[in-house]
Image 1 (cartoon, rainbow, N blue to C red):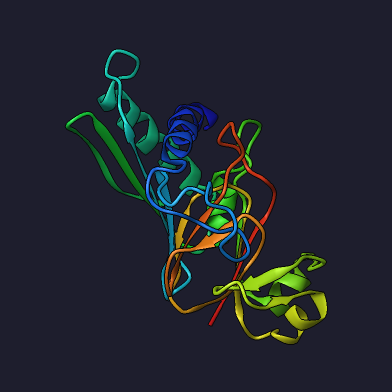
Image 2 (cartoon, rainbow, N blue to C red; image 1 turned 180 degrees about the vertical axis):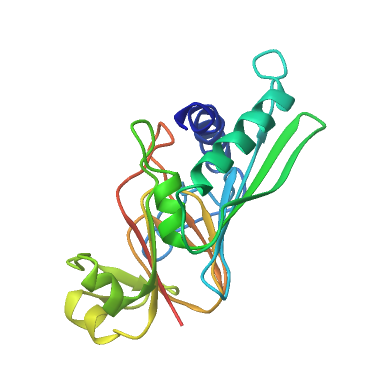
Length: 217
């Protein structure tokens, strides 16, 4: 299962690196970090029913990869994964190669399915989506600062746990995010891009800077 994900991972890292600083300014907690990417080649959208749609868009070099083979490998990989998955199926919604761009859109029935599919020897892209109380039950700790989208108020563990019924997204891989609600607070290395969108800052190699937190209602 790791082969196609390694290839797509290479494309993803390239997309994140190319996206850094391309459009406008960003912020980590507040508006202080202008080098956080506003555009990357990856976007995660959380739908109202809790399902996850991940879209990867990147320049595609035909001399290195064959799009038809990549598509067939991905479809076979997803089919194999679904055989052992309960509670829905992973679906390849779109796979397009046009004008030098490769766009792949995959829908997961839950954040748990997303994490299971994207975690193996070569990948560790876990994702949690639920309430703060549920996150605590899953073992997540909140000894972290989080700042409101205006960068005016910072809260810590005590205030976060008091918001137990609020929704939280916790990611371990940088991407843009769209959520079905209003963003209230973001963790370090996350920039709010509006009411329901945010971007996560990668390191200089396009890799994760740790866990990324977004609280919304």
